[in-house]
Image 1 (cartoon, one colour):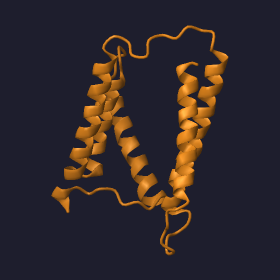
Image 2 (cartoon, one colour):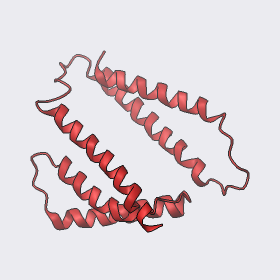
Image 3 (cartoon, helix red, strand yellow):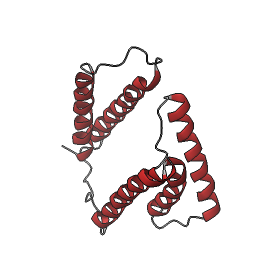
Image 4 (cartoon, one colour):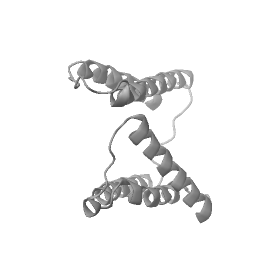
Amino acid sequence: MRRDTKTGIAGLIGCAFFLLASQSIKQPAKLLEPGPRLFPYVAVILIAMSSVALIIKGVKERKIEEKPYFPKGGILKISKSYLMLVAYAIAMTWLGFLITTPFATVAFIYDLKGNSRVKLVPSVIIAVLVTAGLYAMFVWGFQVKLPAGILFE
């Protein structure tokens, strides 16, 4: 069985587990609907659709030989990306969402660029747009308060 198929099956099992577990969560009656309760369900639907697509891809390509999962230096790159996420979480605790997210987005763009050449100005524009989009989505769409940062409270 290919990795894609295994990943798809694991994704569907995770979605099923989430749906079963979420039935026991009690929500306050005064929440505006759909509000923040809708976000996890949208995410589960997207994960389930992606999982089904991975299963189909894995079944279609079952006769093709797979390449190694991590290319040379892949574990180091993933470890670096993980440490960047940890640093982002810590920085967001102290500085808040609006200050750390644009810098983190630019850092992630440069981390994910691989061998491609990335220009600073488009990266900064993308970072500002992504930050504004995420802020609007969470604060106005899902009505979730984002961290302001310990230094600015």
